[in-house]
Every structure is written in structure tokens, then in C-alpha cells.
Amino acid sequence: MRLLRVQDESRGGEEREMGAEGNGTGLGASKEGEARGRTWGSGEAEVTVVGSLSLSQKLKSMGKKSDALYNSKLHSSMSAFKSLSKTRGYPCPSPNSFGGSSSKSDFKLSDSSTGGKVPIHGPRRAVFPSGIMSDEFDIVRVTFKVNKSKIMNYKAICNLAMSRDSGEDAIMSGGVHCTFWSLGESLKPGGVVNNFVMAAWCYHLYSQPCGHPDVSKCHFFFSNIGDQLLKDVDSANEDILRRDFTRSSKTRPLHRSDLLFFPCFYEEHWFVFVVDIKDQSFVFLDSYYVLQSEFQVEVRDRLIPNFKFWWEKLVMLDMGFEMYKLLYPFVPRQPAQNISDSGVYVMMFLEYWKSPRSSLFTLFNESDIPNLRIKIANELLFSPKNSGRKDLVIGYKFVAKKLCRYCCLFLLKMVLRC
View 1 (cartoon, rainbow, N blue to C red):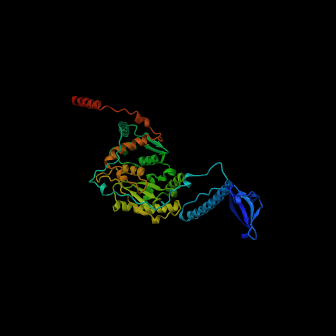
View 2: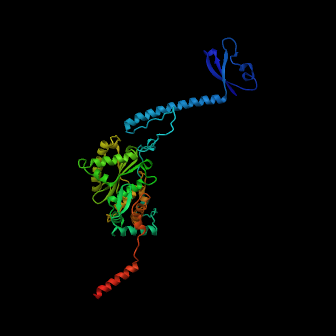
View 3: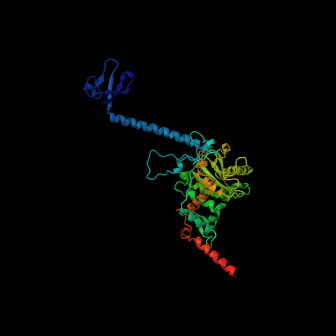
């Protein structure tokens, strides 16, 4: 099969293509018909052969036309996205040069991402438990098990917090320092987590293989930023906020992120303020107070307006925060008489809450808190990024209980003799 390009004089010299068979009768069977410049017909209707194309040549020509059409449409879509980015606050990466090639690519992961953009079908709805998840039913949950080695490490950390080595750095990671006193006093049974341990946990989440903002699309701010957002804009330290926002934007632009986490400690209670850019929500994760409580009314009336003010001043991009909704997801609750475990709950919220579709109420409850304290202490101390005094825990020598009992009896006898 060959394609002949012919010129039909009856149609004003229009060129068109005709098929020619290699065998048989008709146009393909005539050797004279294959000659360039040969004419057929009589009278006014004459056809002149001006050239021929093989099948491979025809396919190659069609491929070039298809590529040109695709590239023209792609350039049009890039121009449309660039104009949209100027109105919605999303910077557009410079388009690739299709005409030339480069030995070194300038591609960045943050330039091609869904981060900071609303899902294609709109913001996702929050997950709330059904009636089967109520207290009268027994729910099978994931249990956080700890082995004997982790328990012994945890006991060593708590003992070191009360020893002469309490001032030694247990954690040294990326400029974050935490002593054995802070770590042990925060994570011991009934201990209240302090801001040094919370900062170490935030950096620990950041240093995970999937924790970098370019991968996770999340930013974990230290609790001192939450402290500044809780203050009046006139009394907040602008230098601290500017430095932290700028530093975080270097790892991934804030407006291209999905979630901004702000752990907050207010009136001896921990909670998390989350700016969910992807689903356009201001989220509050609180294990004790609910939407209508006076505590939450006070903190959200401070945090949301202050965050909008500082974003407009420091980031200077319109993200449509006025349209964001308020969200209080259903999260595990701490008992009413428990006032010390809120920091442990917040650490779990930071690690596992990823979207309104996250169902933390099936992940853990108050019975898991003792094991979670052990888990967190071990993960912080034995993190690969930690260059603190792990040796003090590894080489810690426990005094046998039986020996201690004998010592107490001996001292008691000595006292009685005196």
C-alpha cells in the first residue's frame, strides 16, 4: 500500500492523497500511472500525480503534526494557569523551554505539587464516629506495645532526671536541646510535657524520612510561635514570627503546604491549632475542651485573627482565609479528672492527624497513655538524628530491689541501736 499525492485540476488545483495497491487492477496496476506528472481523465476533469508517500513517511508526518498540536495546547494551559496564579496567590513556575535541551534540570519538588490546593472535588468532610463507636460497645483498637528493653530505657530516663546527670543533654538535634531533667519530668507518669520536649518532638517529626515539608506538605512550628499568636498583635514579638516564618518557607513555601501545625500551651493545657490550607479550615485538636467551652472560645478568638494579621504582614499572599470554616474533629478524650496528659495527646495529634478524614478516635485512648509515654521517650532519645548522651541510658545500672531492702533494714537497725 502506497499513498499518492495528486492534484485535481477540476477542484482548482487542490492536492489530495489516493491509495495505490501494488497488485491487481485499476490505478495501482498501471505502471504508467505511477510515473510523476502522468495525467488521467479527459475533458475538464484531469488528475495529475505530483508525488507519493510511503506509509512510514505518512505516519511520521502525522506524528509531527500531533506533537505540534499538543505543544500548542500545553503552552495555552500554562498561560492560563499563570494568569490564575496571580489572582489566587499561587506563584507559577517558569515554563519549560521545549525548543532546547538542558544538561541540568531546575525542577523542584515544590514546583509540581498539589500542596496548598483544594482537592478536585472540593474540601473534604470531617470523619465523626457512628453510634457503634459509643461507649457501650467494645472497640478493637491498635495497641501500642512496648518491650522490656524500652521499659528499662524509660525507667533509666526517669531516674536520670533526679540524678546528678539531670543537667546533661539527653537530646541534641538540629539546634534543639533537651536535658534529662526536662525529658524525664515531662514523660514520667503524671508529668506535664514542657515546651523543650514538645520542640524536640516537632523536630523529630520533621526529621523522619517522610517528614520533610516537601514530602509531607506539613510544617510543625515550635510552641513559642503559638505563644506569640496567642498574644495581642501589639505585644507579640514580630522578629520571632518573621524569623520562623522565613526559615520554614525555605524548606517549602507556606502557601504551597497542606497543613500548618501550631502546638499551644495555655493555662497549663496543651492543644493544637492547625491551619488546613488544602481543605480550607481552621482546625482545633483538643483532648479536653470542646467547641462551646469558654477556654476554646477565648483561644480561637485570639489565634484566628492574629494568624490572619501576621500572615498578611509577613507572607503577603491572599489565601481567602475569610472563607475558611471552623472545625473541631472528634479526637480521643482525656478523663475529666486528668489534667496532666494533654501534652501526650498533642504529640499523638501532631504525628497522626493528616486531614479531616483522619479517625484518631480508633487509634488510641486514655488506657494507652502509659505506653505512649514510654514510646515517645524511646523515639526521642534513640532517634538517628540525636547526638545527646544516649550512653547514660544504655549504661545505666539499676540497683537490685532486694539489695535496697536489705540496706533499709540495716539502716533501721543501726538507728534503733543508737
